[in-house]
Length: 87
Image (cartoon, rainbow, N blue to C red; front, side, top):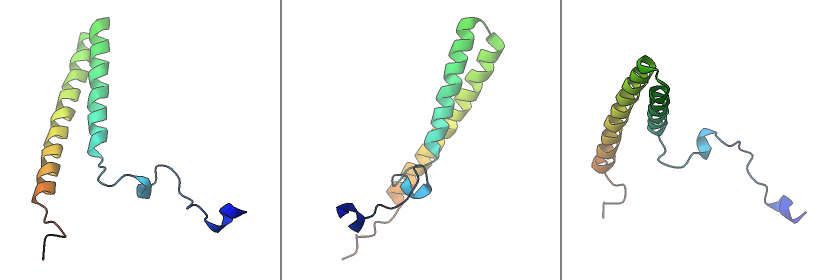
């Protein structure tokens, strides 16, 4: 009964309020780019040139979109005014 005085919040894993601060959906795009890269490598090894080329092209496009979003995010973070900087 000692634990009843401090009930834990009932939250499911994966809800938006359980994500760490600063997490973005752009990381998932990098995961998709890596997935298509792996598909391209496997298809290339197995001799499926058309599928390998298409998957590699998609992976390349997603990777560059991820890089662009990363740069925009970093610039936004660096240019954002600090809340505690005033005297």
